[in-house]
Length: 456
Image 1 (cartoon, helix red, strand yellow):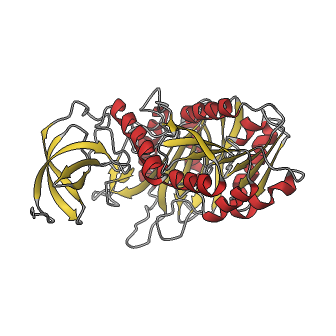
Image 2: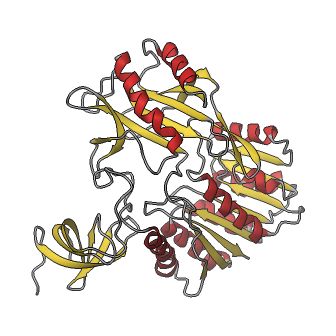
Image 3: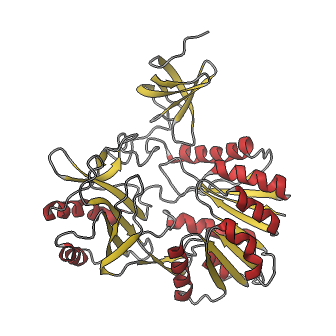
């Protein structure tokens, strides 16, 4: 047997990119995952973890660079954990994501002949993120830092700009740190559990240019807070509001349950699908506005609604998909677990004069079996799903199969859980998977969005 152990040095050809963003090579019929590599690279790597059938390696040297390897747009891309693929050409990123979706449907879902349409590429694979949340820290010299964590650590890589976020946010990132420094506000320390400021959160309306700035802190009491917020509002006219969120809990959760606005208003306005939306600091809204609109257009085109349909939008959030779809249907019912999101969804419906929609708060598993009560004992013509990364739990799938709508549009940010759930719906529910449309919502990372269309 050929030697295979931790610490061993190997030469590998990288042939693929994994769904977690690592390069994939093979050695003696074993798979080796190596971060920071590109398909086509010939590399030297040291094994840092081994199992009988696979291992993980650390890149030691690029012996021959791939033709798909490029210079990253970010000067700290090799350190920062925010992006995995800035060294990979955009064309190769798209090919890897397309393959990721196909592989998940084949290997996990068991779909041998499903139509996977060509991935919707982003027109601009940089400068696209409409939201960024940066942990705060201090350098050894005591200066305030903001940035993403170094790969595999909680060490902050200090940033003054980020090439994947909307570049209109860059001045705030660089300058707000200096103001925090001058104010002398304390920074939260994970080890001692002392200090106030934990994160800096920035949002922007891509269409409107309106911005929100939120300080996430262990306390409401920051000396001179209102004065500083007034200065920020004056310096940055695009700031619709400045807020503070209190999070005193330990753990990795960024946001606390309560947010207060200090200056301006507690939301920004954004235009999406020719509608106006209020977006608050903690509101879920797709990171890539333009790509979300493109995927919505695919859904609208596929459903070909006639204005007579009853639609259920499960995991509806603030109504981002519900409201544009409601304009084309007879009635829409949105289901969402977060009470605050339901309130904002209703607010957005009223803001746009859309009356043929209703939102219910509760878990989808609890609410889905009851939807006929809200539809005058009518089975919905379409159910739309957009669950979190973990996908739908079995109770949701069972309720969906029992309800048995004619069509399902399942939007997902995780091809693996999508494939798992589609398999259950098709095998136990008798559905047929018509087609799957991938879209690149997250350029420079391994993440990919999809929508799958099923027919009873």
